[in-house]
Amino acid sequence: MNLEEYIKENTATFDAFLQDFLSINLTNHSAKLLEAMNYSLLNGGKRIRPLLVMAFAQNLDIKKEYYMNVALAVEFVHTYSLIHDDIMDDDDFRRGQLATHKKFDIPTAMLAGNSLLTWAFQILSDESTHPNTEVRNYLTGFLSSSSGHTGLAYGQSLDLEYQFGNKNADYKKILKMHDLKTARLFKFCTRAPFVLCNPKILLNNKKTEHLDIFGTNFGLIFQATDDLLDYRDLDKSVDLGNIMSYKNNDEVVNYCKKLAKEALASLKNLEIDSQVLTELIQFIIIRKS
Image 1 (tube, rainbow, N blue to C red):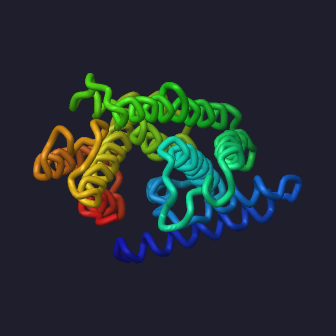
Image 2: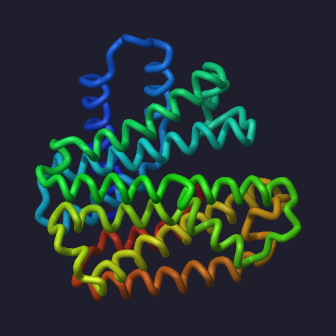
């Protein structure tokens, strides 16, 4: 199976799992809120984070429901962040369709995002994700720290500062923002499947270090290429929060290739022979959207 077939098949698997989950768990006690949550979750998307969870988990001996629940949780957090990001940036569209706050209204969109964020933690804390309480507690805490003031939310606050002309922005600070805003969630995606498979992984500092290198580098590549695509789409007009304000096209591509080389070396150290993961990280560098 080539990468295109893998992405198509596993995206369909995830979307079917998501649809079933929503149909079972969403009731009509607040129809407008639930409609906004559904709209945001089912509004397209590349599903890169769930795919990364699935790609690692499929190399391990894990019950499918366990890792699919983790994939759901991380996609819920990602979707919450997009809803709030569109509000803060006052964007009209997301993935070619009206942004949630434009389709509904700002209060409903905020509540939808908040609900998805908290629902992610509810999913991870449920026994259907793993029978071991320590595993559930660890995953819940790790996703929380990756999402809040020590992770994604902090990165987003820095992004807002740089968007509005913080003159103290520089290349190193942009990389820190990329790590917080984007890479922290990807690090969760790579570590979580191993914790599901064997909680003792957390006692192996060398193995978790290799996992974190792959997840962090994957996220940094993803954000750098996002910036590069924005630079091209906006005809070279970008704010101080974009890596292209500090580096040229070739420098960013070479930076991504260096990160990819480090990430793939970490896979070998983990003794994972996954052509899918190798091709996926290379695909992220050359993607067009």
